[in-house]
Length: 379
Image (tube, rainbow, N blue to C red; front, side):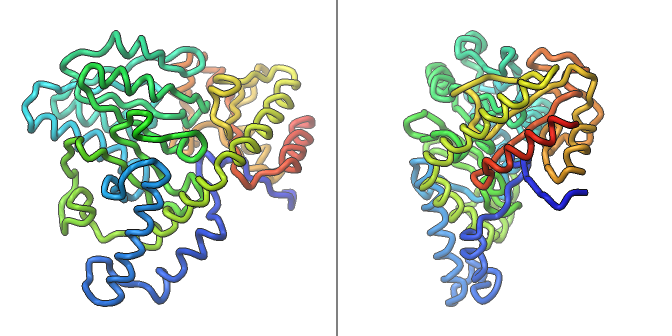
């Protein structure tokens, strides 16, 4: 195996930024207090949570009181759907339906399956060949029984950016709440919960150079929501459990760093992404999956092969050359079944199984792209 190492699997997880690790270290060592304790160490931990909550809130354009810290995107998605739907049921308004799409992350789709078992109605909408949900399709599916619409900001497989502002507008016109899973899109596309009309938003730290095991859920102050776990009443009673102070500090710092550099990062990653797309499409039998240009997430490039290559085989070959990539989302890595996302886009099983995803971060360089070009030319 080569000594050269290039990481192109940033949609699965990212490295911790040095500044983030530095910010976390005191809370792993000397500042180890429980934020619920009333002594000086508890005060220091509670202060750290307040700072991080404001950092995340500032990145979304909301109040700190509207941010709930969680263990990551999956918990945030589950809390958003199960919590709001339970509250809707308790209010007795007859709104017992959720609308979502066929290309959502498993955290949303499996939460919807659980809601179905609890007697709620679920409508799953299809998307076009690029993974895009037309707002008119959502409008046609709406009704006065819909409590929540949940559509991801950007797809984790092919990088499609959805028109969340228009989709939220449609939901609101019918008196429904709008949730977006922004785990992939957060800090890699403009998101402002007030301007975009977003009622709930899920995010995860390890996609933005913070540690794994920490995330957040934005819930607008007017949205009714019930907890899905119970205990000591932390996070204003919405998410009981002693807070992961070092992780939350890391998430706050990572949010601040990402927002300060977001414009430049988007420009740089978009440039490298487009170079990779051009290089790959210059190879015989290689095709891009998903949209082009501004409707594609800046760090995502996703391909299929006509020559019968399996995506997992290609990932292994690249790994032997020191390049980390993926065949699908990390949650479905290793599966021998076609990606349900690619199937929803209309790809055949063989096309879906031939997929390769290249995903960038702010730390990728022109040299990384050149090395990928050189390796792909001889595989």
